[in-house]
Length: 347
Image (cartoon, rainbow, N blue to C red):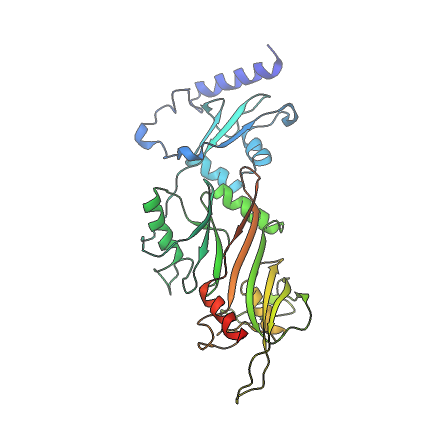
């Protein structure tokens, strides 16, 4: 018997004697009612050990080859299932070439109250849901907005579609910003998406209408953003702020009309691409450069005669599917209120 096989057999015999790992029939002493609920849809995380993996443990395979985070590994200890060749094992079990490691994640749910808030899916698979968020709706329940949020609408969406997952928002949009919002259906995919964002592999493009006619066709705003006061929601450009980079390209300019209150300044319809993702980044950068978003009550002014919110829309997203690695591109059309705004400015 090869030395590696002998080591495996001896290790498993000792652990079975100590009742540290289950037999093929299940964990000794555990009743069916105590076994964690596992979604069959999660039976997709599979890895076959190769000769290049050396003398790794199951835990090392999960971290180094399958990309599971330390936090998720802790959850797997108490909730999910990790199997080697069809038999549930502990994370410190060893592996050899040809072993098949399979992971089933624990099924998780949220306790938010389901509400009839429209949800518009743009892309969905077993791991992710991308929706086109309407303006005027808060993403996640807070003390100030305990209900009437996108999360509440997603609970209703799950009821109607027969799905069940814990809601994990990968990106956030302000209440009055419309557009693409990513929801991860499990913690592994949330971790993967957050890593992609840190590596700038998630491309985010926005459309906005700003005050003033930007003279150059394209440009970059590279200015740090921070919070002047801890108890304020407002951010601003600060020397000791976080690095923040926004690229923009002019799509259309509007001359505007002269009024008794102020001379004509015009407007610009722009496409913006974020290199970083700070809170209020686009709103802060554009306001600081003298081109606040139309209708932005926090960094500019309310303009109900033009639009009832800041004219900002998350128009496109591209990322890599966490399990398959396939590149996914999502787009959301310009919403009706921003179309009407552009029509008004074009007259």
